[in-house]
Length: 261
Image (cartoon, rainbow, N blue to C red; front, side):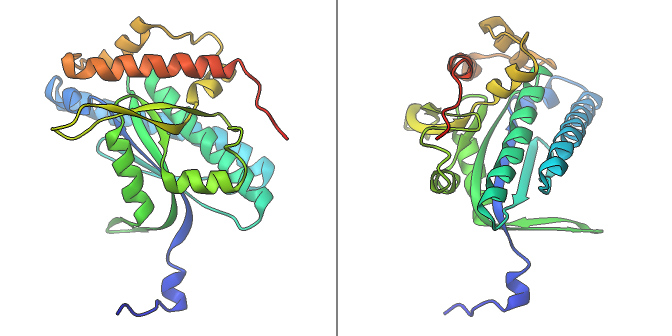
């Protein structure tokens, strides 16, 4: 029988949202380029993260919320934030977390680095020391698993995150740039891809708000998937087609104002 954790052990964990993202085609970047190119890509990710962090940090200070943290390792990005206790603060914190994640997805896409990702919610542990960074927690695993199943570039809301968003009346109707749609998920080797009704971040809605000239087309999506000398083979076409279909749906949703009770 597991012993109950003492108070100090309980305080080591945080409760909040976790976002896990990974670059699509990263293996191609490594195999089709010199190592210096991979280093350039990592530095580009760093620049985008720092730029969006500074922008959203300013917004967080205005509403009195703490900013979300992030870790980058290889082709993966982990974003996390501690959830406040007060209901009003929770809505503000979700808004900031959404703003950062949506901007991250969009800016990486327009720099030729499409990513797939997922939100999850729960207790997690992140420890930064002089000897390394250590992470643990069910929401990190959940976000990773749902992200890995996506057959498009975008961010899906995993069940744990969907529950807390539903409890806060954010999903009925969807607010904060969240869209409900059929999501293409990859099956195992014996299963074909299938679509499941889920919620996703409408990152393109926020993108168009700041950059109305960023109009989407098939050729633009193809170009971003092929950037940095990435190969666009048969196995990539489904992701391109699904991403374009999703972004077109996001664009249509962006034309509709949020319904607020």
